[in-house]
Image: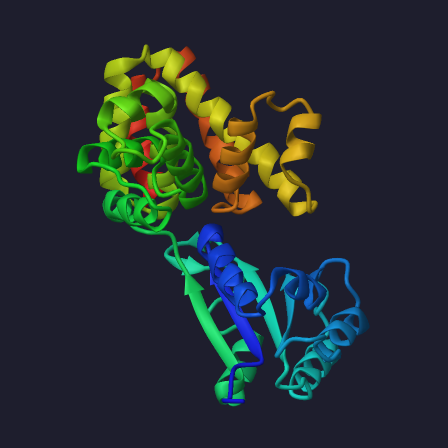
Amino acid sequence: MSEKPVVYVLHGNDVHAMQAFIHTLREKLGDPAVADLNLTRLDGRTASEDDIFNAAGAMPFLAERRLVILTHPFTRLTAESARQRFCQRLETLPETTALVLVIEDIIERRSWVHFPPKHWFRAWMEKAGKRVHYHLCTLPDLSAMPAWIQKEARSLGGQFTAEAAAELARHVGNDTQTARQEIEKLLTYVNFQRAVELEDVAELTAQGGEADLFAMMDAIAEGNARLAQNLLHRLLEEEDELSLFGMIVRQFRLLLLARELLDEGKGVADFLQAGISTSQFVAEKSLRQARRFSMAQLEEIYRTLYEMDGAVKTSNTDLPTALDTFIVALAR
């Protein structure tokens, strides 16, 4: 057997890319029925150290390797002794194991928050050599999304015209998970018999202000101030300024509530059950966008919006100008 990594570190803010990487590893296990017997998924927030290493240390059954996927791998490793023991036990894993550490992250001030360059685990990675493989999964730039959409469509056996890809990118921003869902929906709509065209996207995808608002939020999270500002100006042309302000406040409130659910380890079903929204699309989109912000960031943003609302009501500020300043500052 050729030497392969034993530990895979998937890190970044592109959940779709992480899922695709894991899917590729799973396919390498061979027959799906056998693969299921050699696949274990664990959550580091609830799994004990023994749970993790008992699964990772087990021998594969009728397959070359065993695949163990561990999300939130460092949540419980707060003590220095626990961190050292975790690294020591990684060194004892057999070559028949592929342990995947999934680290979903966000960017603040152009730096990773949860797995920064000086994170304690990176020291072990440097020493581990070929036993570890680090794979960075970053969301595409917004300008690269039309090409990404066309490539993804081809991988599914379909096609998008350049105009259709650009329009879909305008709707979804660089949210690759939502983009993938929309691509599949549109290809199914045309029955994979022809290329998806601009009119198809216009007919099936969220329209107008909602789409531009989602795209603006993506631009803010990415730090693309120019695009965020352009989308704001487009929204100001399409929407009443007070209505638009209400939409922005509502969206950040949704992200604040979504971030709270994420921090509690909850997801879409909990979002809907809590009555935050009745829309599956809004729930999924809000949770994905909330991953790009910390709770502290969102709380500060919400305070700023509250102060802006007061200033507007007392006629101490011009709303379009205030929004322009707010969006540009936020996206930097």
